[in-house]
Image (cartoon, helix red, strand yellow):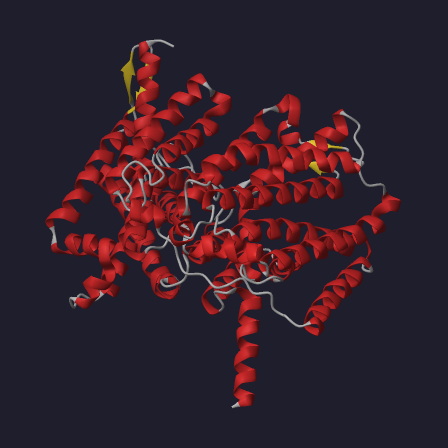
Length: 621
């Protein structure tokens, strides 16, 4: 590659870094003051782009003919995103302020689903092509290459935004209060400063920056409904690499990730995504709190309830088992559709149990648990197709592959905690997804691996019975461990790792064992998924699959033994039923997720247990 081409790629990377920094700085500001990691941040990016695009093409096309008019529309797009941020702060974020961080994350994921369908309804599903920016339509010559003038403008805008934020936070009273709230919100409240308007202003500023980043994309790419997911994952990479709560760290990480992304497209086009996440993984292994993050953020832990084995009596447990088996039999009797849906529910339940084991007992949070699910699925499928392995050997191969990767990856994971740990797991999942997508000779790429015949049609009822029994066995095993001395040691390690280490518990070894065991069970679930579906596609390693596992246990109750069962029924069965007769069912599902996180943060089953306890106490009184 010549000097001119390299310079062009560096400029592309720096231009992309501006977008990443605008997004990351807004997310960092919101987290710094509210302590909420907003997964819906990409939705405000998409809103700024879609609103501005429709304004210059359908609303006021005359404004796109002048630089001032077009610039005004871009700023208005940012203001629309900021106003929506204010509504979200009042209706959702304010109510989730004291909830555990993971519940906040899932609630904002529900917000993403709701906003996506709302924008699809209002703006329509089509891409919107906006005109070029007046006065900045040309390009500058770099040898034999050309660099768009608009991207040169956005490249220069990044440092200016950083300088503006720096002056705002250091030279104004409002900024000083924001910094004080970032360090000690309770002390600021005790000094007589009302934190509510401060938090509202920060959320509006953060969402406005996201909307501005989206609107700035218009002169070089169309606005569409996939913009939210495309940008939010990379934004999380930047924020976590830079260090949660650090604007300067976000700027440095945005430049680093932007350049690696752009240069990677030239040198390693098939591994660009892997390089981005590998960069984050290397930084977090080197500095678990990120480039400029505080160690306090990295080690911050939240108090969580004891893992509940409710119902504890023999009769109560028998009732739950009877309900589970009865509903399974009822679904099997509904024909192929009901049988397939029941299989999906139970496999997702097993997948959820693997994550629940890791989170509820080990205190390890994962945003990329789909990595091991996918490894199990691909391992089983490849063993069956290439080695003609039967179902037992195929499932064992899938579990072995998940186990092998977990043994290697776990040594890095156990050094981190909280969001940093979650993002490391997400990095692994994205690398697995990229491998499944781009290693076409082995995985088939987007065409997948099809034609699996591990289960013969006449064996389906037997397999269903074995799956049902296996799920119940996994529940019984989890209950036995949770009620044992080992379970008490795991929860002690989860709640107070320093005290547990001082008491002589091998904290790192326990975390490692929990991680590896959870990954192996997820591999089994993935192998079963491949067996029942008869095909495997890269989507099994996607972010959506990892989020589904989180939704399963958080909707049902992450600290409830039967939480995964209730959550998988709600997510899989409820989603399938909504999808049959409702075009905007994902938006409705998002509203349900937000309602559950606000009204019953302990999940449906936790809320039910609490309600029954209060009812019983009231009758006794």
